[in-house]
Length: 409
Image: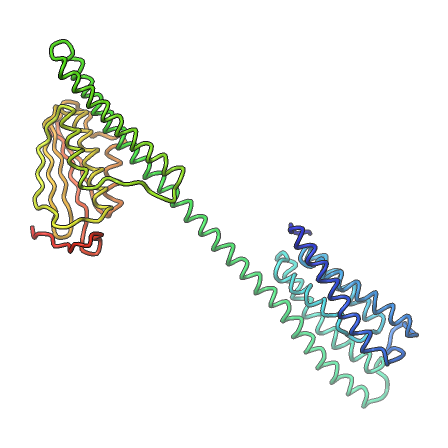
C-alpha cells in the first residue's frame, strides 16, 4: 500500500501538491467569479458552490500529494474527488489537473494490479466525463431537441479529449516505469559482471599464490635437505644453501605481499613476471640442486604480449616446481617461438610416482594455458614426465613498439 520514500521526496510531493492546489483553485475561482448559480446538482447558491469547489480541490490535490507514496490509495481518493465533483454538478476545472498526476503515479510506481486499474480508470474517466457533460449541458435530457444534439456533440468531443488526456498521463507513467525497470536491469547486469570479474580476480590471485608458494617451498625444502647433509662435512655449502633459502623466502614474501595488496586495492595490479625473469627462475632451480637444460629456438625477435609472457613464466614455474618435488634434477626445458604460437616442453625424470598426478599445480597450468586460448598436456610413465603447452600468439596481440616478425618453423 505504501512505498518506501526518502523524507525529502515526501516533503517535495506535499509542497508541490499544495502549490498546485493554490494555483489551480485560485484560477478556477477567478475565472468563475462573474458567473452565478450552478448548472446542475444539489448546490443552490454561490457560497455553497465555492465551498464545494474548495472541498473537491482539497480532495483531488490530497490524492496528488500521496500519489508517489501510495498509488492505490491516491487512485481511490481521486475517484472519490471525481464522484464528489459530479454530484455537486461542477464543471471540470483546472483542479482536475491533479488527476493526471495520480494516473502518472499509478503507471510509474503502482503494482501490476494498480497499473491496470490506472489504465481502466483513464478509460472509464473519459466515458464518464462525456456522459456527465451530456447530462449537465442537456439539463437532464430535456425535451429541447437542439439542446440535446448540442449536448451530445459537446459531450462526445469532451469525452474523447478527456480520455486522450488521461490516457496520455497514464502512458507517460508507464513509459517511466519501463525506463526505471531498464535501469534496474542494467544495474543488475553491471553488478553481475562486477561479481564475475571479482571472482576471476580471486581465482587468478589464488593461482598466483599457489605458484609462488609452491615454487618457493620446493626450493626451500631442497636447499634445507642439502644444507642438513652438508653441515657436518662442508659447512661452506651449508652456508650457501641457507643464503639461498633466505633469498627465496624473501622473494616469495614480496610476491605474496604484492598479491595481498591487489586484494585490498584492486584498482591497480602490481608488476607481473615477464620473459626477463625466466633467468632468475632458472637460477632458483639451479640453487635448489637441479641443472635444467634450457633450449630456446627460435628466439622471439620482439616483445610478446604481456599475457603470453606471464603464462609462459607461470607454466614453466609450476612445471619446474613439480620436477624438483618428484624428480632427481634431470630436467629439459624447450621453448620455441613460431609464427602463430609459442611451444613449451618441460621433461623431467621421475622418482616419485605421484609426479604431476592431480593436485592444483596441473590444474593451474591448464587454466593458465586456457586463459590465453592455448592448450596444455601432461603425461608420463615410470621414468619420465612431460608437460607440453602451446599458446597462440600473433601480430594483433603484440604490445611492444617493435614489429613482430617471428621466424618460420
